[in-house]
Amino acid sequence: MEQTLGRDLFEDETVHHINGVRDDNRPENLELWSSRHPKGQRVDEKVAWALEILARYAPERIK
Image (cartoon, rainbow, N blue to C red; front, side, top):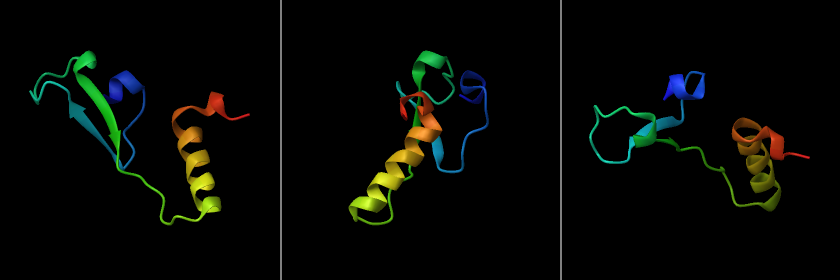
């Protein structure tokens, strides 16, 4: 997965094998999972968390 992404995994990321076979590391069998989630439920905290996620995974979507 790190080769596919071109970077090291973040501490909160894991790799899921879609077919359940842990030694089947074909890129099409791998999904990137993140356990990161917001600390609270206040709207401003959720917005800040959403911006962090976008900055990490889809910076082109931040306007």
